[in-house]
Length: 353
Image (cartoon, rainbow, N blue to C red; front, top):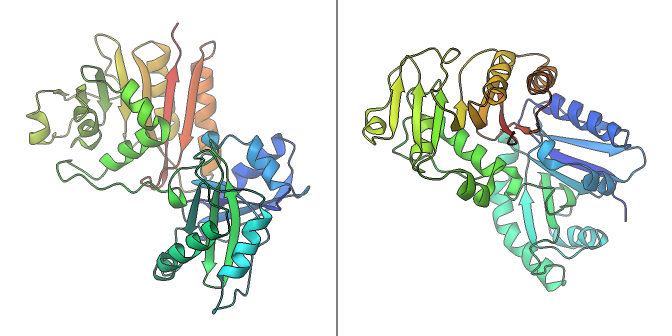
């Protein structure tokens, strides 16, 4: 079975970056093709010239895609769905995908216009999932593909599938996080999402243990520090600005009013986190230097992107990290998270010497 379209969800306004990235990666894997991407549509469709988006889906590493929140191999876009019976043509297309599915996700692009479809999608989800189950297409194997319906309008819909290990587990690729009322700032959600995306539940249990030590560069008022403290880590918060009083009362935070680019810990720490507003290349070099010198074992950091040539700037930062860590084994993931804005978040970890 071959499918003609690879559909990628992204942040509105970043369609160009998502398109450039998938075009480059697909060509490197031997899948040249072309993209269709409307500005502010929050999605990109890539069409391999060979017409086999499912093979491309299998070849790609979703964790290495920066700007895509989700990727789905799709059949031809269905248009003109009948108002009185959308289920029949959608179910018929789902059958052609040749799979039994673990879950059904009814989605829209992340735009204000598409969000207006939510009142339609909610009741439709129940009815369509029941139809999929009755047709024998819904199984119990958690490793099976997910079935995705992405409605562009109430009469136009992409039907496709995602694969285990090559997808986001959340509908639309968006984790639904609640802002904790005790946190000092909404930036706390960026680090919480990063921990879910980069580490997962098992990784967090293994890598974030009470008693570990961390440094937060540009910490004030403490949104990222709060996430570490709630897990029992001891944090050196580096910032000339004031920290949240309740956070300081935890007894797990040492506030140092120092320059984040000059500070180094007296002993190596388990974690370095950084959300400083600075040129992305300078942040990339700083983070990589910490790990190259053995001052931190792993790091999560944000790169604030320029208005133009954003993908090129991310690639430049990747090169800076590679040059700084030359000769060292390391793992780097970069992702534009839902709670990011004009930025991407990175996770960097060095192997033991």
